[in-house]
Structure formats: C-alpha cells, structure tokens
Image (cartoon, rainbow, N blue to C red; front, side, top):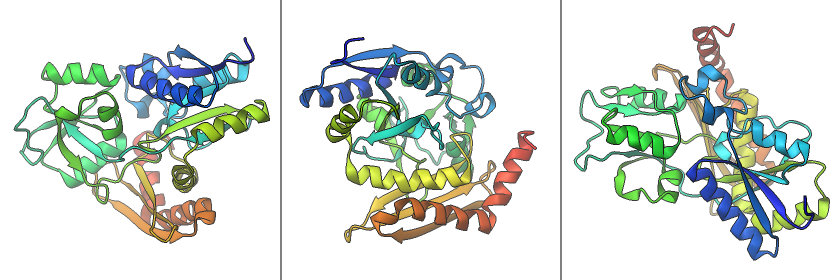
Length: 313
C-alpha cells in the first residue's frame, strides 16, 4: 500500500464512520493523507444474542485489530468504551481524542415521555445500563436492543420500546439531540470506562516517526490521563462491557485526577462504589487501587455471583 497514505480501519456503521472521518480530518489538517477502510465486526454481525452471551472481549474490535497485524491498515478507530480492558502485546492504544459529554441519555419519539412512569419499556444492550435502571428506576422494564444506532431508532419508532438508553456522544454526533428526553446524572448513572472518547489503536511495530506524528495530531492529554485511570480500574476488575462496572475520571481544578468507580449486581440490588483522588502521574495506580477497594468491599462477591448466574464457574 502507498507509504504516504494512512489507512484507517473502522466499523461500517454511520456513527463509526463519523468518528473515523473526524479522525481523518484531524490527520489531514496535520498534513497526513488518509484512506478509510470500513469492515464488519462480530458485534455488528451477530445481533440475535446479547453482548454478554456472545462474549464481549474484542467483539467490536477484533477484525480491526487483525487488519493492523496483517499490515492492511495503519490505525484502528474505536469508540473507547468498546476497547477491551487488556490490549494484545503486539498492539497499543496510541491516542485518545478529546472526550465528548459523558452522560447516558434517554431518547424517545414521545415528547411527553416520563422516565418515572410505571411500566415503561426501555431498550438497551448494555449490562451496566440494565442493572442501574433496575436500581434507580425499578418501575421500568428493560428489553434487549442490539444493532447500530439507526437500527435501534427504527425499532423505537416502530413501537418496540417506549424509549432507548444511549450514550449522549453517539446521539449528539448523529444529530438526534431533539429526541433526548432525559439526561441521566453521572454521579448516579456512572458511565462505562472510556465513554465519549475515540480511541486510536496501532501495531507496536508501526514506524515510530509516524506514530509520533499521529499522536501529536490526535491525542488529547487530559482525556488520555483520565482514561489511563479508568482503564486500569477495568483491567483489574477483569471485565469488559458484559460486566456492569463503571468508572469516570475527571481532572480537578488543582490538576489531580478524581476517579469515581464501582460495580452493580445484575439485579441492581447490590452496589459498591468509591471515589479517590491522586496526582495525574499516578493515574494507573489510582485505577488499580480503587479497583482493589471495590473488590475487597463486596465487588468480588458481585463478580462471582454474575459468573455463577452465567454458568461461567
């Protein structure tokens, strides 16, 4: 392939392509020409089962990562929340783009939609969202909602659900802000690791000069530091998007990292969370330390219960 063109691997959904086109634009502005290479992942193809049942590790990333290994592409562009907790040793996360607003939101075609109304049906494919909804909105029912954003919105318009629970970032990037009926507060409905950011992955063997140029063009230092803490927490919890864990790191006015993280049982009845602050240089240590606190104060039991319920023991 031409040496001067950076080939970008991406999922083929409209949202993934939007994100990749955004990355391409930033690289182009830095004088780096690009070509976008869309592909289908397991998570895009298998829509008749929940993410927890098909195995969440790499479900939206594996095919893109294989293209990096083959040398067919230079960079893989992911939603940061879809990236597995442990990266294969021959690959690396090179950059994280500046984070969008991190809230989960409730979207509906019904202008008078009320999330507190008894018996409403909320569509979501997220184990974490289902568990938190059971905890915070026990009067609501949940149903599996797989597929890309447009597919889920079509199902919503057909009346399969009263509303969908989605990440604000995707809703906003696709221009559906007018359907947002409720913003879920991040202090109670804590987002998953990485939500709102775009992650850029590459082979560890990619040319070092090219890596340096890409990182300079794309990486948002504050976001990267926050995600180091969040991802360290997730790595220690040994969970992906099939585990209802959550973590949100923010920078304080003093320049430290504040991390709020924890886990909730599938029923929503058990909930363990802690907050802790540390200097930015200790971002990963902060994530690991908070994970230990969560595990030692009931998190390990919640994880064991989840594995037992899924027949993983």
